[in-house]
Length: 111
Image (cartoon, rainbow, N blue to C red):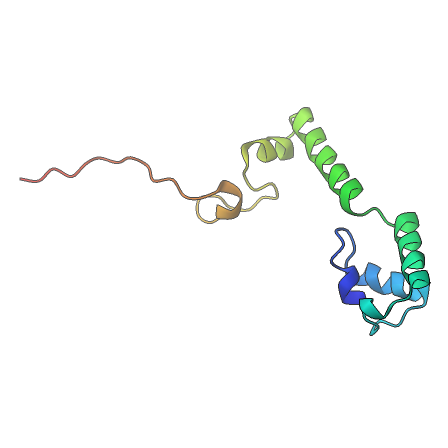
């Protein structure tokens, strides 16, 4: 059950264990073995105590938008699509920068 709860955006290993302990479901129980009552209890606990999925994604997007609107350093890095947390960009950083674009150089002259 702990592993399957982690598929929900915003629930990690510790939160999944905490949810199972709160509801009283053993960690080894599988999802297809849950009763309807247990599923309702899980849903209630998650809705009451945790910010997940759409709400969490919206909050993250709003935080990034706020940084960009302030035009602080982190906001500018987000706007330009560069690493935000001080990583080097001379080499690496391909995940943020995207596929390498070749720079047009001088053509070789053949004699």
